[in-house]
Image (cartoon, rainbow, N blue to C red; front, side, top):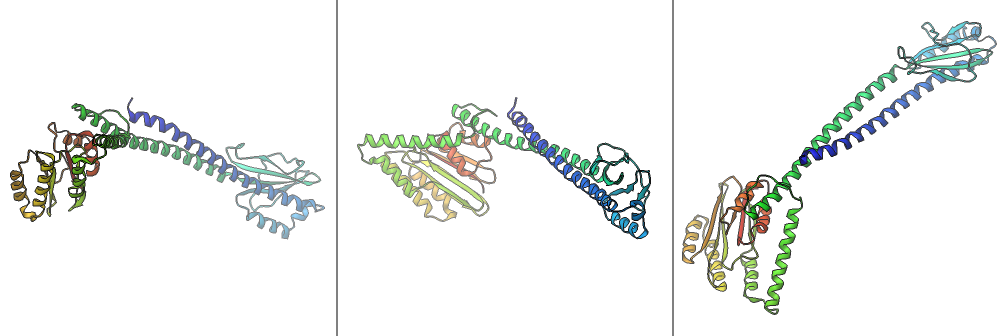
Length: 393
């Protein structure tokens, strides 16, 4: 089973569970709120009519007087969704308090207290909230509220819940694919480092995502161990190797710069020979030429020659770069030279790299920036002496 499939199978049920629970809670809360509001309206209308009738000697006659009946009908017309409102006498007479005919849907027996005797779930053909309130002496006030808004609300909430669940599933798959792609990319980088160090070419593999941090830590530990061994070997004295490294850090430091839209990174490795050097030139047309070289000989002599060579080339104009660099390398007898010119594609270069591991590593990890490339190559090729990387900024 692939990493992509595993991540999606882990993320999808979680997203669906969260979306399903949230949708269910939203549906129940919204439906309960709307239903409670309709119940309150129905009970309020029925109780109000019942209290008017309770005070009358002949409720049908007194409430049916033209003035009072008109007032009650005007008040009932202002109640949203009121479908029926009437007063029923024990002998079967009915006083309709709305402009439209009264529809008797339930028993007219007076209940002991105001109640809801029907709701939208009990009558699917015509959803209603039906309230009854006793008005004394066997009279009963009836109010029916149209519950179709509640049914519509519930329907739309169901559609919204389905959309939320479907959207969560799509989001889970999308995020799973993104995370899986990043994890797989890190796995490929780990495998490429291992394969390059073993001299084996491979397209994909598995590893841990934190390999670069670990590799950097190993590099720092290695530097510390080397420095400590030199200190013990020289009984606390600096020694010529340590002095050369210190002078190189001051006079020929590592380089990380961006010019003319090109990012350039050059890094000398801890095990570099005293005579290593680097030269570079940016051109206005978006190009960059880098030369990595090494002058053989005794440490002090080789380092002095490398310093002199770089100083000589840097002192000239850009137009003379090629001529002065060629003449200086012939004059000082350069033993190893690597050269590359950036046009548009990223480049990775190492001084001692007969197998082309630097370029192969770049091919496997084309998204790395210049500084990250040289940092990885420093761990991958500790004997390369000096490494460089160029790419569009």
